[in-house]
Amino acid sequence: DRLTSLAGGFGGESEIDDVPEILLPIFHRRTLAQLCYLRRVLSDDIREDVFLRGCVLGIMHGKHRRDGSTAYLSVDMPNTFSMSPEYVRRFVERNGLHQPPIDVFSKLRQRCTWLLRSGALPDTPQADVIHGDSGTLDELLSQLGIASVGAIVTSPPYLGILRYGAVNWIRLWFL
Image (cartoon, rainbow, N blue to C red; front, side, top):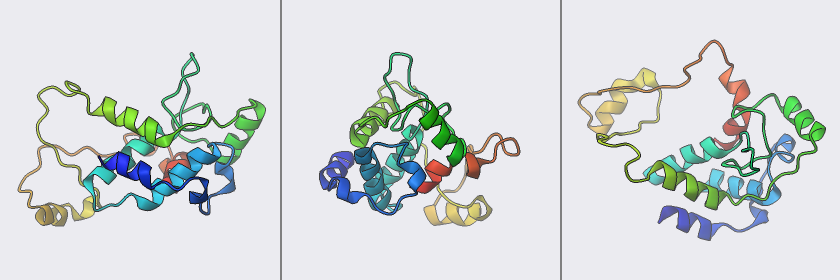
């Protein structure tokens, strides 16, 4: 499958490219190398890659469980959105946090398995995910040969309350 193929192409910690210094206290070096690799090789032209990229964004960082386990790739963060880089740096330092050595490919497989589990979405009709500018929706639909749309789901739901660019700077780095 696509994820196995991607994992097989991973070259180790040499995959780390030019990353912002603030990411270093958040991710273990090997985890960061895997993220750098996926950031570089996932393609917008391969549907599976678009799905995988969305899954990575969902598991990049967040609050760990009380039992110490985590569904996330980062140090234990106070939220699933990113506080400012300086706040994150102080939070990691103040709490003596250390980056957990989490294998991105394993966590990604777990998330995909959970999302695609049998019965997860009973009686779900066929759906298409379109990534693009909503201002050009007519053109996008025409290019894809889609005649009508039953529903549109967009983000952010809290526009005007949260500054999405500011609170998603870690995810934006990955994109």
